[in-house]
Length: 265
Image (tube, rainbow, N blue to C red; front, side, top):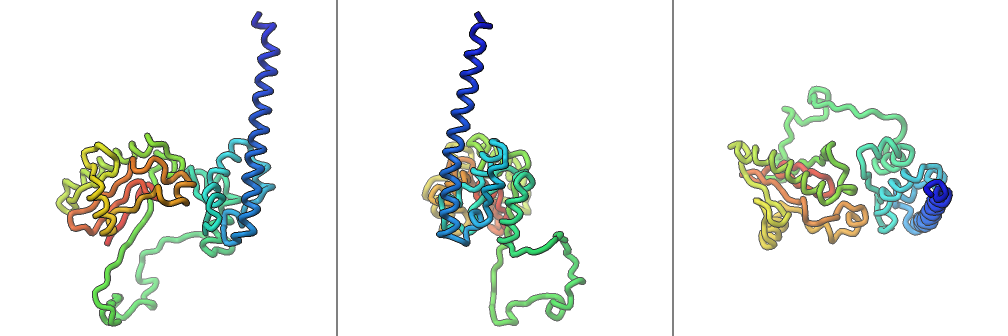
């Protein structure tokens, strides 16, 4: 009986695959059509500007699905400047022919370049003020504050747009362990404010609004259509929060546009 049923099973499977392929072609046809419209209406949308239909068509079905997710925010928000978000750390390598053009355009990079990190002030001493120190008070600016910020993502997780709710919660738990070590260190102290409900460090709406007003906490990501389309705002407010040092000069955002936004005032 099994042998007699086998041909029918194979034909059913082939039919299912053909239906999936047909649906995919219809879906991507609409997707590509929208990108062509964005190219015309918003020429500064870099996602659309550098999108190559020929390149997309030669990708495997799996890679087409991945690239569609990368481009989705710029398709749904035509007025985007960048318009695309990497979802996995290896997207920059896998889709290098496309993303390299977008990144170069955004940063105004031409030709072959290699980034060199150089913290030696001696190499730029001719460009520094006398004594090697920039004193803004001598320029009549008075007391001035500065914020230094870097974004970081952990290798153990997908990038924010591809994270699941479980990923976000686990990332926050991992970071809380690190923050608790800082809290115990008298050089840092402070506390963690979690937007995830029912945790040891959860805060209420009033406290959240207070922190937002002071520019210590980030705003409601779910209200940002660009981040929502990219999947970065998904599962709000789970897995989101901010560590603040005792003196308020060191802040780490968790779960915003990057997994970590590390800031020093």
